Length: 524
Image 1 (cartoon, rainbow, N blue to C red):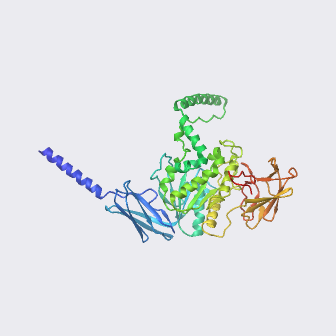
Image 2: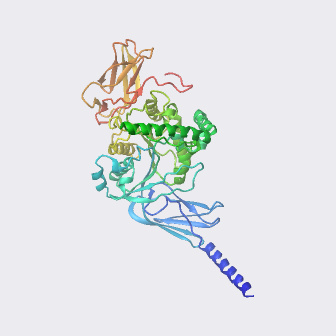
Image 3: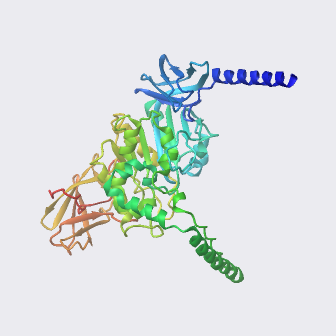
C-alpha cells in the first residue's frame, strides 16, 4: 500500500512539474537578437524566436509593439514599426502569453551593415597598419559588432552562435579591419550608432554563400553544380587514403633527407577530405552563416571576393548577380545596397584558375555588374595593395573608400568615392580616345608621368604597349606598331599597378574595350 501511495505521490509531483513547465515555457530568441544589439532605423523591424505552438508573443520597444502566435514549428515573428535613430540604450521587452518574459538590454537604433567574404575582409584590426595606435583609440561604444561563428551546413540553419559587443580597445583587435574602419567613418559622418554583422571564411567562394535553390535556378551556373556533383560521386575514401599514405611515405623520406643535408623540411601533406565536407561546396556557408541572420534588418552589404573563384572566373558575373538577387529576395527589404571591394593586384600563379587572365576577368566582372544590377558599387584598391602579400595591411583606406561609396550613393552625401571607370571609346585615325565616368575634377597621374599600362591592338588582337596622353577628361591611346587600332586594354592582368587617377586621388580601374558581348546582344 505504501508503495502505491509513493507511486501516486511521485506521479502527482511529476504532473505538477510538467504543468508548471508548460505554464513557464520560455520564449527563446536567436543569437542575433540579444543585449547590445543595434536595430536598423527607418524601416520595419523584424524580431523572431520560438515558443510553444499557439503561444502569442508580444514585442515592445521605444513605444512600438507587435504580437504574433507561434506556429506548429514553434517559430514566431513580429514586425515593429519604423524606429528613429537612438544612441541612448533602451530595452526590448518580449512577453509570452504563458507568462514567459525576456528583456533585451542596451539596445541602440542606427545603421546596420552586413560585412562578409573571405580572409581579406576579416583581416583583423590587430594586424592592420598602426595596429597598436588604432586599437588604443577604438573607444566607440555606439559601434557594435555581431560575428557569426564559422559553420558550414547542408541545410539552412535556424540559428548561429554569436554575441553582440560594443567597440572598445579590449574588443576591436579581433574584428574585421575593413568593417571597423568602414563603421568608424559612418559613425563619424552620420552621427548615429552603427551595427556590423560579420560572417567570414578564408578562401571562400561565391557559390558557397548562395542558396542551392538560387544556384539551381540559373542555367548558366549548371557547369559549376555539375562539377560539384561529379566530385561528390567520384570520391573514393579508400582510394584517397591509399594515395595519401603513399604521399606521406614520400614526405617522410624527404624530411629525413632534408635533416641530413641541413635543409628546410617540406610541409606535411594534408589528409584527404571528402568533397561533401568542403567549405567551398555550394550553399554550405549560406546555410550556416547567412540564413540564421535573415530577416534581421540591414541597410546593406559590404563584401570582398577572394581568389577561390579563379577556377570559375568566367562565371563571376552570374555568380555575383545570383548571390545578390538571392539575398535581396530572402531578406525581403528590396534591392538593398551591395558594395564590393575590388581586389588589389596580386600574382596568382599558385592558385587554380581558369585562364592566365582569370584574376583580371574576375575584377572586370565586378565593374560590368554595376551596369546590370542596381545599387551596387566598387571600392578600388589598385594603388594600396602589396604584390608580396595577399593580405595587405592598409585596411584603413579600404574601409574608408567603402564608406565613401556608402555615404555618396546610400546617404546622399556629396563626396567623391570612385576612380575613373571605362565608359566608351572612339577611333580617331591611328588613335583611340577613351572616356570615363568618375573623372572628378579631372584626370591626372600619381607620379606626374604619362599614363601607364595601356595596350592597343588592331583586328589581329595582338596587343602592343601603347603611348597614352591625358586630353581633358579623356585619354588618347596610340602605338606606331598599330596604325589601324580597334581595341584598348588597361592594366588587364594580375600585377599591373597603373598611375592613372582622378584629382581626388582614386585610381582608375582595369578595363578592356573588347569585352565579349553577352549572347544575343547586338554590337553598338
